Image (cartoon, rainbow, N blue to C red; front, side):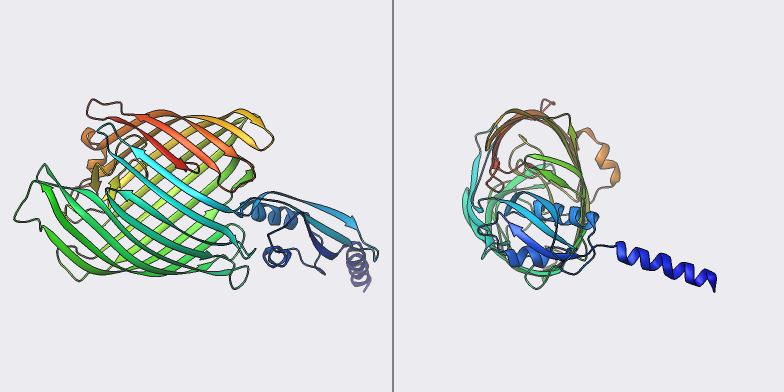
Length: 417
C-alpha cells in the first residue's frame, strides 16, 4: 500500500510539472498560409511541450520550398502553459528553370521552365517546361504532398519528350528519333518526419524512328509501343538545411515494373538507389556525395534503360553517349562559399564524377571493364539567391581523364545533386 501511494505521489508530481502548449502561433509568413503550417506541424495546442518535437517541426519547415529559414520561440502564457511561435522566413517561389548542356562535338541542348512551388500558400507545386534537344519536348507537373493531410498527397504528371538517341549494337551506332509521351498519377504517403513513400502508375507511348547510322536486320528501324509502368519509391531523409549549406543523409529507392505490347521492347524490371551524404566542413565548406547503384532486366537490346548522360550523372561526358542494363555512379564534390553578403552567395566547387555500366546482356564483370568506365573531374561555380527557392545558377566544366573522353560545360538551375 505504501508503495502504491509513493507511485501515485510521483506520478502526480510529474503531471503537475509537465507543461502543455496553449497555442501555436505563426509569424513572418506572407504567402504561406498559417493554417498549412499548423496542419503539417506536430506541435498542437493542448499537447505536451516537447523541444524534440519542435526541432523536428523546424527541420520539416526548412525543407519546404516556400521556406528559406525557420526557428521557434517559447513564451509563458497567461494560464501557466506556453505559447509556441514558429518564425518563418519565406522564399520567393515562382521560379524559372533553365538547363543548358554542351559537349566537345558541339552538341547543344536546353530546357526552359516555370514553376510555382507554393501554389495557394499550400506548398503545392505546379508548372511546366519546354525542351529543345534537336527536337521539341514539353512537360506539365502538379505535386501536392500535403493535399489531404500531413501524411497523404497526390502528384499528376504529363510529358511528351522527343530526343535524338544513339542506339548501340554489334560495335556500331545508329541515331534514332525517340519519343516518350506519358501520363502519370502518384499517391504520396509520409508517415513520419524521415520516411516517405510514393506509389503510382504511368501510361506511356514509346516510339523509335531510325534517322541515320548503321542498320541491322535484327534491329527494327521503327517502333511504336504502348506501355504501362508501375512505380514505387521509398525515401529516407534526414537532411538539415541552413541556407546554402546541407548536412545529413538521404537514401531514395526507386523500383519500376514496365509492361509492353511488343517483343521488340520487352517488359522489364528496373530499380536503383541514390545514397546522398552531406557534411559541413568549417564555416564555409560543404562536402556532398551521391552514389547511385542500379540494375534492370538484362535483355540483350540496343534500347537499354540506363544511359551515360551529361545532365544526369557525368558532367562533361555528352548527351547520352552509351547505354546499359546496370549502373554504378559516384558524384562527389567540395563546395566552398567564396563570397556572401545579404541575399547573395558565390560558391565554388571541385568535383569528380565517375561511373561504370553493365552492357546489355552482359554480366556484373562489365562494371570492372575499362571501356565501360568514365571518370570526369572538374570545377564549377554557383550563384545563389538565399531567399528565392532553388535560385542556384550553376556552371560546371568536366574533363575526361582517358583519351576517348571529351569535355563539356553543363549549365543549370539548382545543385547538381
